[in-house]
Image: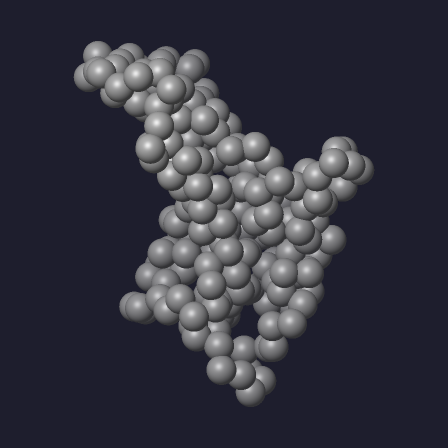
Length: 205
């Protein structure tokens, strides 16, 4: 299995993803890929990612990987599924970093909050899932963390990790910038669990 950003589907007018499929097919795998929004799996974040799955040709077709079905949907879209989890709800019980707390990694970037219409600088709507948690820099050696749902500061490392569905007791090590990048580069834990459960279902087949 492999994960990549949505943009890989359009690189060189789609030739890159086809080259990947061809390369793995030539290496002896049956390959497929699909675009996912992790908000559809209970992650309080709109994060579009491509998951590539391959099964060795020498294995029976019953062992072909089956992608997990969504558990959540945009409110009002599918009444058979739970609604997306808003970022404001996900972070509503998290104290401010300067208040008394016992949270790990609850430190935040002081990078100025500005409301401009490009990635990392847009206002965060507390009533919908968070924008994609970033790992990219702010151009000054730091990380441009997403704005808190109250839009008064940047999310802390811990808040970003919550949006990425990491458990509260998972500790990140390194400088603040390094920790932000670790969080931003990760596959959301809950989404990864859904992928892993489907993989585990193949045991014993």
